[in-house]
Length: 115
Length: 112
Image 1 (cartoon, each protein chain N blue to C red):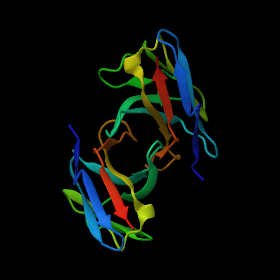
Image 2: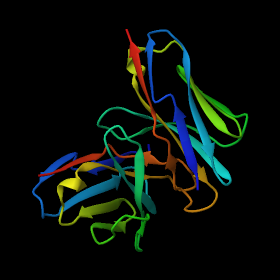
Image 3: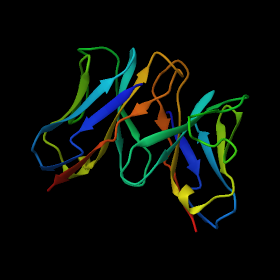
Image 4: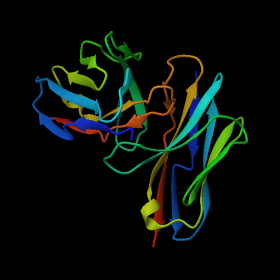
């Protein structure tokens, strides 16, 4: 149980285009999902908290107009990187938790490369 | 501000050579401390949750312990397949119910 998937696993896009990353909880419902960014050999940096049916909460320094988050259902959250630039290239990971528990279960990550 | 410091940054062990990884934390009210394993290019895999000082959890060759200031991940007789980055994270009572603050990780390499 507690499986989280992400799609795509890898994406290459041109500078100025937008990219959508999906995060799904496969065998449970998640009212809250989290989006992280990880640079090479660095730890996970929380970008935002995605709440089903309401606006996402962004961490300080994260541009909400650039990283659009939508949590339209209890099993799906999406992160759209708008007008991507090479500095947005990174490893993006989502997580979700079971109701009543505190653990977070992570997706396999999405490697974004902006050329 | 919650802080998590992991040491060492990197550790190389021979197969069968037991050792410990350290996670020191500063948090205003600890709800839980979490250990994850992360393989290159993949998302973190949940290992343990510890909630109170004195608590211990075990899974195969791994044992996690918790005090009021730090946690240890003990690896007994490691095998090459235990090579990975081990991440520690804390969750505080304040702030978002499930928000985690991560340490920078310990990259473990077990040589055959």
